[in-house]
Image (cartoon, rainbow, N blue to C red; front, side, top):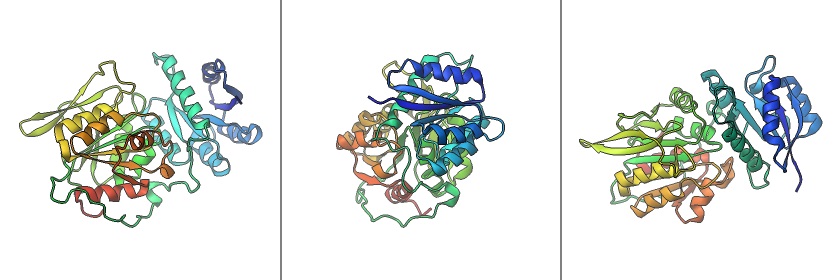
Length: 357
């Protein structure tokens, strides 16, 4: 098997060594070069033609964001951001994803207690994007939110005539999710008539900046979920990293409770756990949505939604960064309707009976 050649970019010599050490014991991964600045990264991307780049977010001179923009303009190499656990680091990371990076990890440091978990996550992402079946980019990159033109509404395939309207939308996503969500949530109208719950796989500390970023872009309200909140129409609740979502009826309202994982879930938060609670509470009025991401999280929960009479929309392969979670759900026969990413807000508006965005 050929090596996956990795270019490691970080202005810290310690971090360059740390990331190299994470990768050097993997038989199929080879650190072909390192760079200590954005300028050097741009030059070495041209010189060594790596299969993958890990890119520091914050560097003097040309930072990670501009380096991503310049490299992505000339090369098809997947770039994984290595982001600090700060609000500025998170914001820059989300902008880098919109400019061509495919994914990110949290930068390990002295306060990061599980460096082995970071290493496993990085190696898994490197292998995923190095495989021919992964889609780290598309031929016509999806435009950033500010540039996007509204597509025509897709043909009507409404499943609810004569039945209860949908009462909750549950969106699950992983790799590619921050950009995918920015192509969906900001295009929902202010009067969107149902609550939305969202699981996005990401490291601790990143879900609140994601919620704040989406909230600033959107007509609906977007918050990081917290125990004691109640689901409300036109509000999207992002489940925080490290917690699982639990929903409970309370005097006619639906209360959010965040709980510890019971040790059985691969992901915390888990799309499966969220969807199972939505199915239990809302039954046939549940609308499940599965977006880009690696793995199979969501299959079990979407099956519960289907068993209770709910409906499932899946993102199409062409617009997924990684067609893993939607593919797994489709293979199990759980997806009722497939939609391209930029059509997704119009599909959701149609299904819940919302006014046009």
